Length: 234
Image (cartoon, rainbow, N blue to C red; front, side):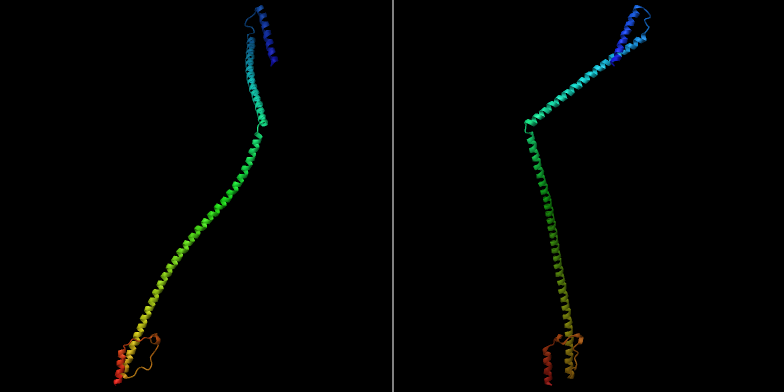
């Protein structure tokens, strides 16, 4: 870039020398106008390039200043950290914090173990409550069944007593009917004996299916006494 700049400056110098020679030897003024315009444009480009370089240099200087400040700040921070580490109890405090963390870790493990035991105890308690509830329901069920059984038993006893009473009543009615039959037969035999002087020689003891010990005669004793008195008077 410097070599091209030197060439441009040399060209401008030569151009000025030639321009002075032209002024000494008057010629056509418009001759070489294009060449002059070309060099003027190059000069403007060089001037603009110099301004850009100056701006970039200022920007680079600002960045360098920021980096320098950042490095200096870091040096100060490092020095402060080294001073703190060498002249304070930070390491001891860190060791204490580490020990405290270990203690907390052990405490958390113990707490977790106790929580597991508590969960087991809660499960056992809930299971016992469930057992007691089922036992209570079972006792209530057995009680209801027992009450129902006693009620049914009482009803059966009542029905049985009623049937026994009905059976006894029917049996009593049948016995009374049989007794009446045999009483009528006895009266008939008595009348026959009064009239004929004899009685049937054979009495069917199984008449109507009754046994002799089951027969109870219901007769008037005065009639029998009168019968025997009449026989004696004859």
